[in-house]
Length: 111
Image 1: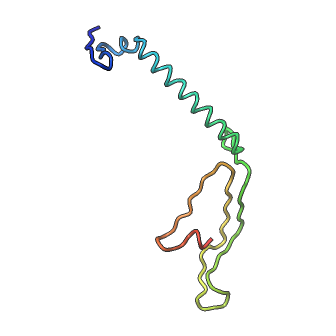
Image 2: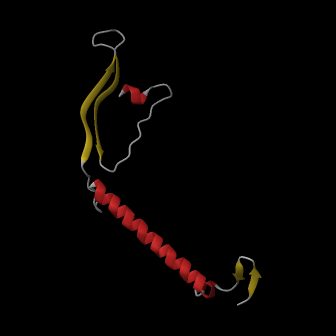
Image 3: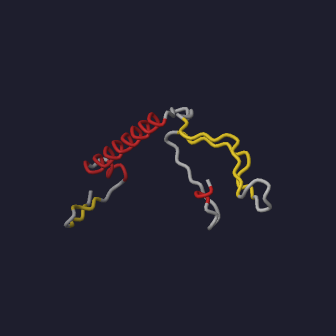
């Protein structure tokens, strides 16, 4: 297998099989396997904390809204403006949500 020497090490040329047989390639492959295993374990710990299993069943409800209505203004006034009608929403442990609206809509302030 021809090699080119440099300050960082050597550049090895060869077939895919020859390259994968090198000690360096074997170490990189093993490192990748270890990283994938660690990632799977972290995901499993997150699922356990959130109460969700492999089957995706829902965890513990932290916030639950049922049939919520929000109106700007006072009832009966001409400037009364419905913002939300009959909204149901559940936020469960481990979930992340984003509430967005048009610029200047003050979506977070409204709720």
